[in-house]
Length: 203
Image (cartoon, rainbow, N blue to C red; front, side, top):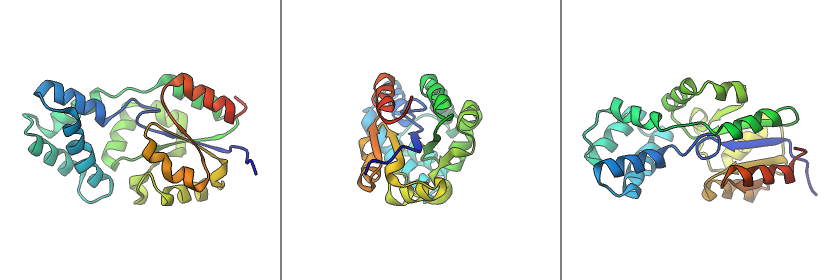
């Protein structure tokens, strides 16, 4: 049975925003002559992931990454670099605004409370576009790319997995939604994103 799409889930970083930690890692690697993937593994995979699962605080995550990478930076300096590199994807946000007329559209983020607050403060347009449908998995103690998060989305928005179109720029984040029956699309660029939406919706 083919279900009509009712909920469109958009990943934050890489879809609604540019890449967060990868951009920061590349910047730091270039400036301090390091391998960017090593920086990414320490900054994001090792310490931010712990903070996102509430195992350590966001401040401790910054501190530990600075220490292990031997960066001549304070926490505040690293944060300024990180947030300074961020940009929204205005084409995606514009399309999300248009889609809201006929569908429920949600932004899904894996962030600590501190980072989620800072990002929303820097980009108030996110609140304007998504309103109460800004979902930060940290607040609910959920791993983002998981069956538990999908079950949460289904319950919150009263939809079946097959009624969800789920966009993410990382294939690993799409595995659980796909297994549960959601329509999953790996985001590559805006043109491809638009074509996928035209196939799934009345856009």
